[in-house]
Image (cartoon, rainbow, N blue to C red; front, side, top):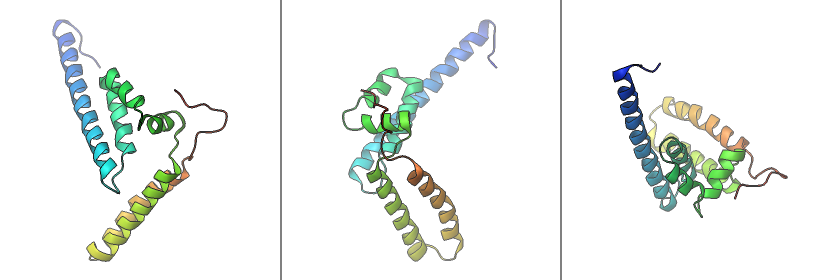
Length: 145
């Protein structure tokens, strides 16, 4: 509920300004993490750029369009946004990294069965979700330019 009246309008404007700057910083943080994912195997790229696109959509149309139309990453972002498509290569990479992470934690980190069970409770639904998404844009539905 917005505060009304003489001082309330100023408060709403100030709150919106802080929210915008916070979202802008959050978006750039995710762009940075996505760029790290380009060079570090196993670190995702697209998921961070999708989060950045969302944050930019709330804070900066200019930067949202920059990501949306980016020559390398724009296609994946648009495919997810418009069709909830995860490319087959990304699915395989995600499944392999989740399996390797689970095996590493189970064999070298965990001192009891608790950690592997908790990790499995997180990774199995995540893997099921990723693997159940479409791998390509449905026929008859063009990708946006």
